[in-house]
Amino acid sequence: MSNIYGDWLKAQREAAGLTQQELADQAIMTRSHISHIEAGRRIPSKEDARRLDRALNTGDVLSSFLPDEGAAVAEYFEAARLLEQQATVIQEFAPSFVPGILQTKRYARTVLSASFPPVSEEECDRLVVARLDRAKVLDNPVRPIVWALLDEAVLRRVVGSREIMADQITHMVRLVESGRVRVHVMPYDIGAYQLLQGLLTLMWFEDQPPVAYSEGVQVGKVHDSPAVVTRLQGVYALALTDALSLKESLGMMRAIVEDYGHRD
Image (cartoon, rainbow, N blue to C red; front, side, top):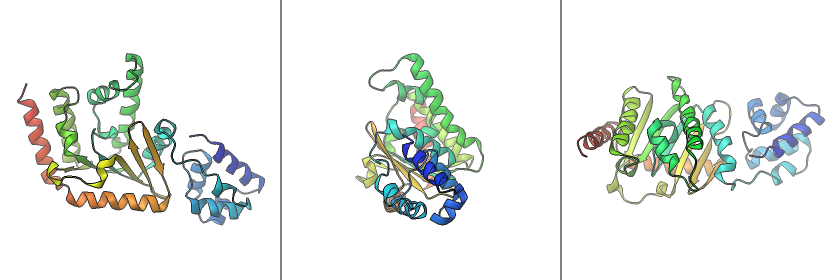
Protein backbone atom coordinates (compact mmCIF):
# COMPACT_ATOMS: atom_id res chain seq x y z
CA MET A 1 0.00 0.00 0.00
CA SER A 2 1.05 3.60 -0.42
CA ASN A 3 3.12 4.82 2.53
CA ILE A 4 2.16 8.51 2.41
CA TYR A 5 0.29 8.03 5.69
CA GLY A 6 3.22 6.33 7.45
CA ASP A 7 5.72 8.87 6.17
CA TRP A 8 3.53 11.75 7.39
CA LEU A 9 3.17 10.16 10.82
CA LYS A 10 6.95 9.74 11.08
CA ALA A 11 7.51 13.38 10.04
CA GLN A 12 5.06 14.61 12.70
CA ARG A 13 6.65 12.41 15.36
CA GLU A 14 10.15 13.64 14.54
CA ALA A 15 8.94 17.26 14.42
CA ALA A 16 7.58 16.78 17.93
CA GLY A 17 10.98 15.44 19.03
CA LEU A 18 9.59 12.06 20.04
CA THR A 19 11.08 8.61 19.64
CA GLN A 20 8.81 5.75 18.56
CA GLN A 21 8.77 4.50 22.15
CA GLU A 22 7.85 7.92 23.54
CA LEU A 23 5.00 8.28 21.04
CA ALA A 24 3.86 4.74 21.81
CA ASP A 25 3.77 5.54 25.55
CA GLN A 26 1.72 8.71 25.00
CA ALA A 27 -0.70 7.04 22.57
CA ILE A 28 -1.01 3.86 24.70
CA MET A 29 0.36 1.65 21.91
CA THR A 30 3.44 -0.53 21.43
CA ARG A 31 6.63 0.72 19.80
CA SER A 32 6.52 -2.06 17.22
CA HIS A 33 2.96 -1.06 16.23
CA ILE A 34 4.16 2.51 15.63
CA SER A 35 7.09 1.13 13.61
CA HIS A 36 4.81 -0.98 11.41
CA ILE A 37 2.46 1.95 10.76
CA GLU A 38 5.35 4.22 9.78
CA ALA A 39 6.77 1.52 7.48
CA GLY A 40 3.40 1.08 5.75
CA ARG A 41 2.88 -2.47 7.00
CA ARG A 42 -0.13 -1.66 9.19
CA ILE A 43 -3.13 0.67 9.14
CA PRO A 44 -4.08 1.95 12.61
CA SER A 45 -7.58 1.43 13.89
CA LYS A 46 -9.71 4.58 14.17
CA GLU A 47 -9.17 4.61 17.94
CA ASP A 48 -5.39 4.26 17.53
CA ALA A 49 -5.45 7.12 15.01
CA ARG A 50 -7.40 9.33 17.43
CA ARG A 51 -4.85 8.65 20.18
CA LEU A 52 -2.00 9.45 17.79
CA ASP A 53 -3.71 12.74 16.86
CA ARG A 54 -4.00 13.66 20.54
CA ALA A 55 -0.39 12.68 21.30
CA LEU A 56 0.97 14.67 18.34
CA ASN A 57 -1.52 17.55 18.57
CA THR A 58 -2.45 17.06 14.90
CA GLY A 59 -6.16 17.75 15.28
CA ASP A 60 -8.08 14.97 13.52
CA VAL A 61 -5.76 14.54 10.53
CA LEU A 62 -4.60 10.98 11.28
CA SER A 63 -8.10 9.77 12.13
CA SER A 64 -9.73 11.53 9.17
CA PHE A 65 -7.32 10.39 6.48
CA LEU A 66 -6.90 6.71 7.25
CA PRO A 67 -5.96 4.73 4.09
CA ASP A 68 -8.98 3.27 2.31
CA GLU A 69 -9.69 -0.27 3.51
CA GLY A 70 -11.53 -0.97 0.29
CA ALA A 71 -8.46 -1.07 -1.93
CA ALA A 72 -7.96 -3.96 -4.33
CA VAL A 73 -6.01 -7.00 -3.24
CA ALA A 74 -3.19 -6.18 -5.67
CA GLU A 75 -2.58 -3.00 -3.70
CA TYR A 76 -2.85 -4.63 -0.30
CA PHE A 77 -1.37 -8.05 -0.93
CA GLU A 78 2.15 -7.07 0.10
CA ALA A 79 0.89 -5.70 3.40
CA ALA A 80 -1.14 -8.88 3.97
CA ARG A 81 1.89 -11.03 3.11
CA LEU A 82 4.09 -9.16 5.57
CA LEU A 83 1.48 -9.55 8.28
CA GLU A 84 1.34 -13.28 7.58
CA GLN A 85 5.11 -13.50 8.15
CA GLN A 86 4.79 -11.72 11.52
CA ALA A 87 1.77 -13.60 12.88
CA THR A 88 1.93 -15.91 15.88
CA VAL A 89 -1.46 -17.48 15.08
CA ILE A 90 -3.06 -17.86 11.64
CA GLN A 91 -6.56 -19.20 11.09
CA GLU A 92 -7.56 -19.75 7.46
CA PHE A 93 -10.89 -20.43 5.82
CA ALA A 94 -10.86 -21.61 2.21
CA PRO A 95 -14.08 -22.10 0.20
CA SER A 96 -12.50 -23.07 -3.14
CA PHE A 97 -8.73 -23.58 -3.09
CA VAL A 98 -6.14 -24.84 -0.62
CA PRO A 99 -4.75 -21.88 1.39
CA GLY A 100 -1.53 -20.49 -0.09
CA ILE A 101 0.79 -21.47 2.76
CA LEU A 102 -0.36 -25.11 2.47
CA GLN A 103 -0.07 -25.46 -1.32
CA THR A 104 2.33 -27.81 -3.07
CA LYS A 105 4.36 -26.60 -6.05
CA ARG A 106 2.25 -28.38 -8.71
CA TYR A 107 -1.03 -27.33 -7.15
CA ALA A 108 0.15 -23.71 -6.90
CA ARG A 109 1.29 -23.69 -10.52
CA THR A 110 -2.08 -25.01 -11.69
CA VAL A 111 -4.00 -22.36 -9.72
CA LEU A 112 -1.74 -19.49 -10.75
CA SER A 113 -1.64 -20.44 -14.42
CA ALA A 114 -5.45 -20.23 -14.56
CA SER A 115 -5.35 -16.43 -14.11
CA PHE A 116 -6.87 -13.87 -16.48
CA PRO A 117 -5.39 -12.26 -18.41
CA PRO A 118 -3.04 -15.21 -19.05
CA VAL A 119 0.51 -14.98 -17.70
CA SER A 120 3.72 -16.10 -19.39
CA GLU A 121 5.59 -19.20 -18.27
CA GLU A 122 8.28 -16.98 -16.79
CA GLU A 123 5.75 -14.90 -14.87
CA CYS A 124 4.04 -18.04 -13.63
CA ASP A 125 7.39 -19.34 -12.36
CA ARG A 126 7.90 -16.09 -10.45
CA LEU A 127 4.43 -16.30 -8.92
CA VAL A 128 4.93 -19.94 -7.89
CA VAL A 129 8.22 -19.08 -6.16
CA ALA A 130 6.52 -16.24 -4.30
CA ARG A 131 3.64 -18.54 -3.28
CA LEU A 132 5.99 -21.24 -2.00
CA ASP A 133 8.09 -18.63 -0.19
CA ARG A 134 5.06 -17.83 1.93
CA ALA A 135 4.98 -21.46 3.10
CA LYS A 136 8.37 -20.98 4.78
CA VAL A 137 6.50 -19.76 7.87
CA LEU A 138 5.92 -23.48 8.51
CA ASP A 139 9.67 -24.13 8.71
CA ASN A 140 9.51 -22.99 12.33
CA PRO A 141 8.21 -26.05 14.20
CA VAL A 142 6.17 -24.01 16.70
CA ARG A 143 5.19 -20.56 15.36
CA PRO A 144 2.90 -19.55 13.86
CA ILE A 145 0.11 -21.78 15.08
CA VAL A 146 -1.90 -22.59 11.92
CA TRP A 147 -5.49 -23.76 11.64
CA ALA A 148 -7.21 -24.29 8.30
CA LEU A 149 -10.95 -24.69 7.85
CA LEU A 150 -11.66 -26.08 4.38
CA ASP A 151 -14.95 -26.43 2.62
CA GLU A 152 -15.28 -30.01 1.33
CA ALA A 153 -15.26 -28.58 -2.21
CA VAL A 154 -11.56 -27.72 -1.75
CA LEU A 155 -10.82 -31.45 -1.56
CA ARG A 156 -13.34 -32.66 -4.15
CA ARG A 157 -12.68 -30.19 -6.98
CA VAL A 158 -9.96 -31.61 -9.23
CA VAL A 159 -7.34 -28.89 -9.69
CA GLY A 160 -4.94 -29.93 -12.45
CA SER A 161 -5.27 -33.70 -12.17
CA ARG A 162 -6.22 -36.43 -9.74
CA GLU A 163 -2.52 -37.05 -9.10
CA ILE A 164 -1.91 -33.39 -8.22
CA MET A 165 -4.89 -33.48 -5.87
CA ALA A 166 -3.72 -36.70 -4.21
CA ASP A 167 -0.25 -35.18 -3.65
CA GLN A 168 -1.74 -31.92 -2.34
CA ILE A 169 -4.07 -33.57 0.14
CA THR A 170 -1.32 -35.99 1.24
CA HIS A 171 0.87 -32.97 1.96
CA MET A 172 -1.81 -31.56 4.26
CA VAL A 173 -2.36 -34.93 5.93
CA ARG A 174 1.35 -35.12 6.75
CA LEU A 175 1.34 -31.61 8.20
CA VAL A 176 -1.59 -32.58 10.42
CA GLU A 177 -0.04 -35.89 11.44
CA SER A 178 3.17 -34.08 12.40
CA GLY A 179 1.18 -31.76 14.64
CA ARG A 180 2.34 -28.68 12.72
CA VAL A 181 -1.14 -27.59 11.55
CA ARG A 182 -4.77 -28.38 12.26
CA VAL A 183 -7.15 -28.93 9.35
CA HIS A 184 -10.91 -29.16 9.75
CA VAL A 185 -13.30 -29.91 6.90
CA MET A 186 -16.75 -28.33 6.53
CA PRO A 187 -18.83 -31.15 4.99
CA TYR A 188 -21.29 -30.63 2.17
CA ASP A 189 -24.25 -31.73 4.28
CA ILE A 190 -23.95 -28.65 6.52
CA GLY A 191 -25.49 -26.66 3.68
CA ALA A 192 -25.12 -22.88 3.52
CA TYR A 193 -23.06 -20.99 6.11
CA GLN A 194 -21.83 -17.40 6.26
CA LEU A 195 -18.14 -18.05 5.59
CA LEU A 196 -18.97 -19.37 2.12
CA GLN A 197 -19.00 -15.76 0.93
CA GLY A 198 -15.22 -15.73 0.49
CA LEU A 199 -11.74 -16.54 1.71
CA LEU A 200 -10.87 -15.37 5.23
CA THR A 201 -7.58 -15.22 7.14
CA LEU A 202 -7.42 -14.25 10.82
CA MET A 203 -4.04 -13.28 12.29
CA TRP A 204 -2.82 -12.64 15.83
CA PHE A 205 0.50 -11.09 16.86
CA GLU A 206 2.75 -10.94 19.90
CA ASP A 207 2.53 -7.18 20.50
CA GLN A 208 0.01 -5.82 17.98
CA PRO A 209 -3.77 -5.95 17.65
CA PRO A 210 -5.19 -8.84 15.57
CA VAL A 211 -6.19 -8.32 11.93
CA ALA A 212 -8.27 -10.11 9.32
CA TYR A 213 -7.88 -10.44 5.57
CA SER A 214 -10.86 -11.24 3.35
CA GLU A 215 -10.81 -11.95 -0.37
CA GLY A 216 -13.27 -12.35 -3.21
CA VAL A 217 -12.87 -12.38 -6.99
CA GLN A 218 -9.93 -10.06 -7.77
CA VAL A 219 -10.54 -7.97 -4.67
CA GLY A 220 -9.35 -8.18 -1.09
CA LYS A 221 -9.29 -6.21 2.15
CA VAL A 222 -7.07 -6.00 5.19
CA HIS A 223 -9.24 -5.25 8.23
CA ASP A 224 -7.84 -3.93 11.49
CA SER A 225 -10.93 -2.19 12.85
CA PRO A 226 -11.42 -3.95 16.22
CA ALA A 227 -15.19 -4.24 15.69
CA VAL A 228 -14.80 -5.78 12.22
CA VAL A 229 -12.04 -8.17 13.32
CA THR A 230 -14.05 -9.32 16.35
CA ARG A 231 -17.11 -9.96 14.17
CA LEU A 232 -15.08 -12.01 11.65
CA GLN A 233 -13.47 -13.99 14.47
CA GLY A 234 -16.95 -14.82 15.72
CA VAL A 235 -18.14 -15.94 12.30
CA TYR A 236 -15.08 -18.22 11.99
CA ALA A 237 -15.56 -19.67 15.48
CA LEU A 238 -19.23 -20.37 14.76
CA ALA A 239 -18.38 -22.17 11.52
CA LEU A 240 -15.73 -24.24 13.26
CA THR A 241 -18.37 -25.69 15.60
CA ASP A 242 -20.13 -27.22 12.56
CA ALA A 243 -16.95 -28.63 10.98
CA LEU A 244 -15.71 -32.19 11.27
CA SER A 245 -13.34 -32.95 14.14
CA LEU A 246 -9.61 -33.22 13.45
CA LYS A 247 -9.85 -37.02 13.46
CA GLU A 248 -12.88 -37.05 11.18
CA SER A 249 -11.26 -34.53 8.84
CA LEU A 250 -8.11 -36.66 8.59
CA GLY A 251 -10.27 -39.68 7.82
CA MET A 252 -12.05 -37.85 5.02
CA MET A 253 -8.80 -36.55 3.52
CA ARG A 254 -7.20 -40.01 3.56
CA ALA A 255 -10.29 -41.53 1.93
CA ILE A 256 -10.30 -38.89 -0.82
CA VAL A 257 -6.58 -39.47 -1.48
CA GLU A 258 -7.27 -43.19 -1.83
CA ASP A 259 -10.16 -42.44 -4.17
CA TYR A 260 -8.01 -40.20 -6.37
CA GLY A 261 -5.28 -42.82 -6.42
CA HIS A 262 -7.54 -45.65 -7.53
CA ARG A 263 -9.42 -43.91 -10.34
CA ASP A 264 -8.20 -42.87 -13.78
